[in-house]
Image (cartoon, rainbow, N blue to C red; front, side, top):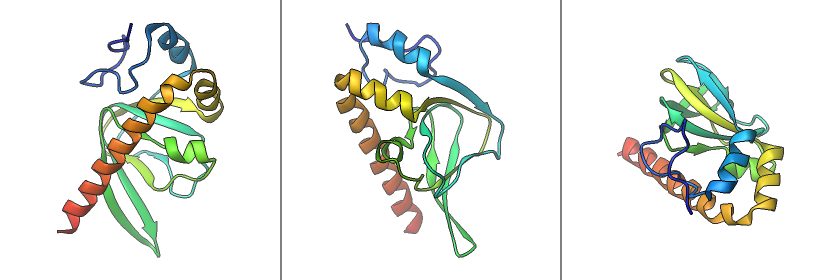
Length: 147
């Protein structure tokens, strides 16, 4: 049986991970809920990735800073997953994520994510599909802003 929505989830659609109900409770125990006011930097470009973030509510601006210039890449809203690829690669965040309004996030630490994916490989395909979809949406936002 697939879970519908987490009891606390605010994402307007079904769970992006399509997680079985039994696994859902285990994941919920690993997740840290975080609330931020507007204009808060959640993580910075080139900061070592500490985990992934799932946007529950609010909006974050995604930026890159180079040579003293701040370039807006796009926005992340409910349902977006940030930092998954960087966390899995043990690399640094590719951009800065800054709240543009009050924002609610779920945070899954690197160690917990790696353990979860190792123990429950069935979570990998939907996670990768969601990350790929959001990456494509960000690229589309960037292209629209350029033309």
